[in-house]
Image (tube, rainbow, N blue to C red; front, top):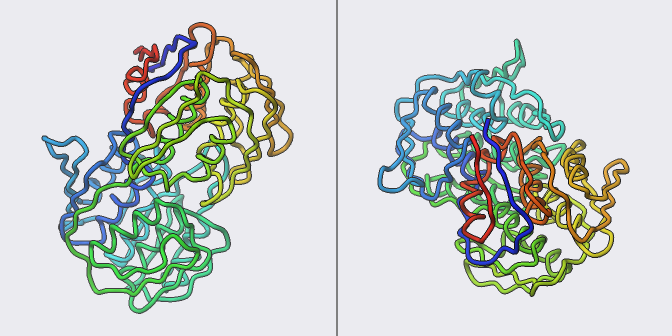
Length: 420
């Protein structure tokens, strides 16, 4: 099992390019099942989760081809879609596999998708998906660990989701595109990745309005067709590199990104003392060699502070001046990185869904273990501020969501080695 060895401390400096967003790429790849025509994608990130989704689509009968001249170019063609069965052996490795539920049901009239199972950071119930599909006229049952849904054709309806769910919104949005009549999704997720999915679906011929708001309107069509789409930049990867620059008192410019996708994160970085400059597709952060100031954050659905940046700001606060209070409102078990940061000398106290972080001048090197994707990122950037060599184990979590993170950090001056 691979691990990272990171020599600290260092001060990051230079330029890095953001990859395509994993959380946008996965639902858009699933959307290819809606059409009997090719969907050509650009800027698909080279990640473990993306490869898993590719294998799942191929297992369903979709043609999956990567462009030889462009590693980020994929062509997905579901013209010969032959199966509605998403097997447990694939779904269990990636919860996002449930995204195929809506497209399979809408296109084939039936779907049989394994329940995705547990998640290290907390419960992610699928009831929103099931209730929404029932509202669209499907017969849905859960038997033997599988969601089994059937509908000769879905029928448009007003769907009020009990809770804000990004994946639930995406599943129902895709299903509604081929429904008979109009659908209104109330209490919909507003995340940029939902917007990117809607943009792609519209390019395929879907009729969608209101993405990016809590009410999305879909006018069902008889079929979708061929399209091309470029995946939006990864706002969480962008935020991770900016947090790493602030934590190391460095100066970093992230290219090929979009400042509008992470305004809440940029506000907190400014409060931490960072000087920020932005352009249409770049963000530059400069700490001027100064130690960051501790900041309070409270996570909530977009456009508030994203839960996927919480762990990175715990790491930043661990070496900041002052005391930072971090409140997690989205997932009930998302402080597992705190125990590992504490092994590095971080002074953090957890009270229910809140972590109180008292900053230190520097952290200590230690062997640590990643427990989930964003926890992994927090340990890696914390290691950049440690006085010695830190070993981060179980980095397969990192490979699910960060494309060549060790190479990108090395390009900014970090001493990072992947060890087999």
